[in-house]
Length: 268
Image 1: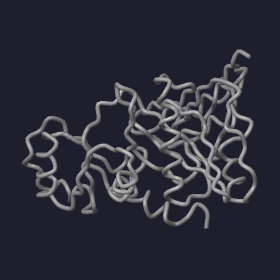
Image 2 (image 1 turned 120 degrees about the vertical axis):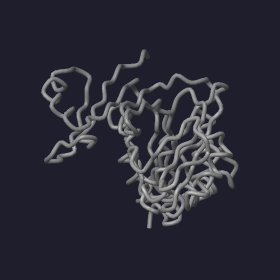
Image 3 (image 1 turned 60 degrees about the vertical axis):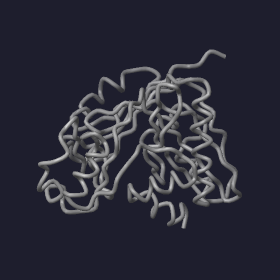
């Protein structure tokens, strides 16, 4: 099975994921596992009353989260029940300057390629835009690619993976999340690269040579969320824009209906 089941085992649980990353030398935000309100109080004390409480499994697009800011570590009876009485994780706040992600692929022969990092902006916990090139220090892209390659090798991975990072003021990185699949922040590759993340995934799992990850254009990918899909007629009138609709029948608040990518040709 490609990607391997081990990748899902690691990525589907936030505590297991961060423990795995730290174990292979990749830094993350500080965290504490939380199973009850007493453990939450202790974890908040450790983080000076602030942090992001998340479900360990099943959360996505900002779901299953609660934020604590500069609060006394007490008086939170019933918090875990309100979160569904499921295993939780409290993550410390990170003073990051921006968020980036790297889409990488590993083939059956162990070859690895990685696309340029995208700079991501989220709104209400949902990815809004991915921009290439990212406004980061020259050494940061290589550090992100190296970390992604280390993850792929440690998992004996085959296929495409997305790895999200926080970028700190000095250009260093903290890994935030692993996505063992093609990823929303890599959708730009279908417009700005000869070989998209989707084709790259098929090449990898079929044992074919991996394609070059180079991009021929700078670009901005933007998600169409809910009623944003009503913008389609005006978007279709724009030059240098690729539109991808998902064919969903109903536009609901917070639902991803599609995306588009505006490209700008790079000077030769």
